[in-house]
Length: 425
Image (cartoon, rainbow, N blue to C red):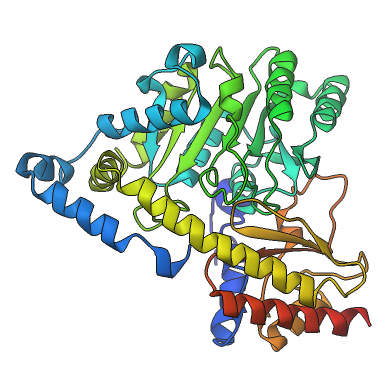
């Protein structure tokens, strides 16, 4: 009899969606739960009318309709890529010459997670190192685990990744002879998942300088995840990390329409350094022979017909109400509990809670099942820390306000407060 299933090392390394599956199983077993866990977008503000209008415009042109239903190119639909680059340059207040970038460096994928995987798979070998914020986006941590890569946690604060901590970690790896293993620094630069913290402008420039300074036999890349950039509810936008890389050889910028328009359409993109375009497209061609062409024509129509920005205003208004509801409920139901604190994000979809250090928020801890019994589901913060981190706190919680209504948010936070009181008393 066969004793092993004969799986590849990558299949054995992969965390897959175990965290998501575990949370979904809880939700299915308790259908009346208020889920403050899923990082989904608001069902009520999905762009039904803008998408319908875009489809009507697309179908009205027989030539474009036929082209949309045919295979496309591996790199992506040219007119869409042009608009993506134009929007990035406009947002950053830079010209293409100032950022040393062209349309040839814009790659379209089926969501930004695919772009992140392709870049990681093109750059990283097993046992390589990627520096990540502690905490960090747990799906990307899963990608790194899938590749056999070491995710090393670096300290963060209310201004995001701390450059001095990155410098210290890079110097430590250099002293130990492992600097050649450090291939990238990963950063969610706007409204980080899970903490909703944005990296300050000063730190953006400092991170690029560090990556360039420590690059030796190979270049250390910064993988900038901008998935939440357009979900800002207060304050002014700031230039991307990519804008502080005028040579264009260090920063990979990844973006997506999943949070700002529709996750079901599955269109993401990346702006890559020139030397990465060929390797990424080589990997991509072997996988999908070109991302869904119809979806790209659709998103180009949405952008070209000015349907996107109007929709953005609608969802920003909705999420602004939801984040206010979350923070107001936290003030009422959580603030009176000693040792509970949280940040006040100005964008994104998450609120990051800190509980007393003796409270284990993990799925094996006392609080998680108590919260489910009270009627609320959350993401344990321990899932969001790189496995190789100096500190792996067990007392953090990620709350997402994207899916539930304001009333459901209030009920969920109240239920969480009841559960926490049962554990800390």
